[in-house]
Amino acid sequence: MNYLRTIFTSFLLLCGISAARGQEVRLYAAVPDSAGFVAVGEVFAHLDADGNVLDTVSLDVPIISLAELDGWYYGIDTVGKEILMVHETGVVVAHIEPPLAGRLRAIASDETTLWAVTDAGEIISSENGFVWKSFDFNGQYSGFYPQMDLRAVAAGGGSVMVAGLTPDGRPAAFTASGSGSVWSERLLNYTRQGRPLNLHGVPVALAFDAIQDSFYLLCEEGLMFRMPSCSHCNSLDIYPVATLYARVPLGFDVLILGNDGYRLLEKP
Image (cartoon, rainbow, N blue to C red; front, side):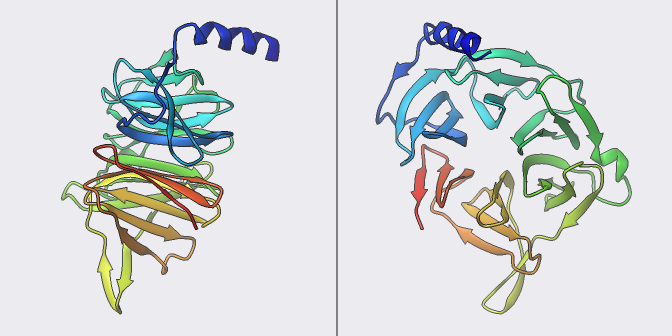
């Protein structure tokens, strides 16, 4: 199997990676790999551990969300009808189109499962990238939770979190155990200078950090909302960027991506 994978990789490399060390590109999502990061946006890119672009591959359409499972990458493009299976060279090898009512908005993974969400409130999961199970959040929780326009998903620590907007424009987040069958709302409140506050922001992405044991909700207006396991310990940080796209931990370092090519590597 490894021999065949090597042959396959060599073939795909012939399709061409254009070296672009130091090139500034717009990146919307990333995942860690053994050498640094794999990132996507207007291109498929490899980054070193300091967040520098090493090489890029052109994409037919921008990829706005990315997950990795078993050495393969899975992305959501701006059209939102397909899940793209991408080789480590940046070549799209499969277009997977689950039967969905809504438009795909985000994808994530834990150690065993891919998760994705749609703007119609669908939460889908797969253990191989090809066969997907669908959970109709809006149908199952009609009359109990608001009808959700889901825009973000993350998984880790034995839990899954989804987030989006309610019909009145309020951000909301929900968590479930690894099975994803029973969902509970995670309140987006926090305290600053002794004052109780609620998060007001448009959700863009979710991230999980195992070292911090926290989920992070990234929003427009540079808002990053931390949700640790203690539900009373939420906190808010603000970054100098209009929109935050991704927060990607690599050990204790964290890569943060935002609009207009914003890229920041935070070190402890």
